[in-house]
Amino acid sequence: MVKPNQRRPFGGRRNFKDRTRINFLIRCPKVRLIDDEGNQLGVVDTREALDKAKEAELDLVEVAPDIDPPVCRIMDYSKYKYEQEKKRKIAKKKQHVVHVKEVRFKARIEEHDYQVKIKHIKEFLEKKDKVRVSLRFRGREMAHKEFGVELLNRVANDVSASGEMEAEPKIMGNTITITIIPKT
Image (cartoon, rainbow, N blue to C red; front, top):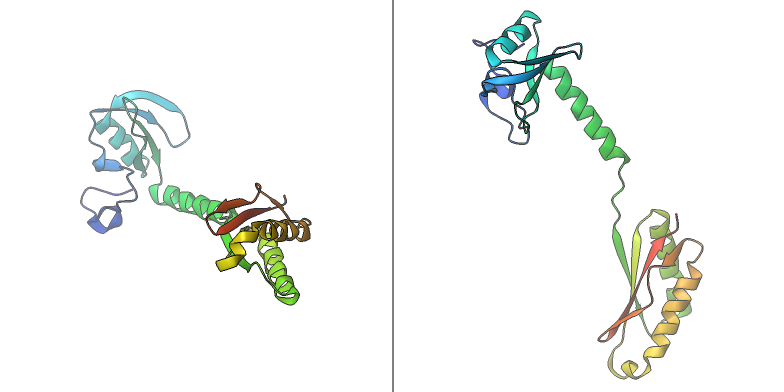
């Protein structure tokens, strides 16, 4: 419980990411109060709610500030913050950010170079990343775009065990691209 003559949480400085109001930072005249056991005590005066929190040697924490009157709960604020941080870390650990990797081909690629790039594409797909395969034409190669489409279809067939094409090849100027997504 933070007492009036003690330092406030955050050392007098407010953490701007945390907008939770506690104890004397709650400025509204009346609040809907929930005690430390989860029982609703109804709408009470804020001073009365602070007194009840002080009796229990806990903090008065505003848990739902957007409604009228705001909902406040009597709880140990430091324990509440610790549990919230723990939940946030677990959620962050479980999430997977999908990256888009790009592999570039040329229209006249040798077989060994092709196999190395296919190997890289398969590694990216195993890591659950999307892969954008692009093929750029230069000079006279522009006259034979069908070779590029054939090459990209060959790439899609070679990695079909790990991933699948998101859409048909897109021709944009002198570049043809496909996006390969990992199989689930």
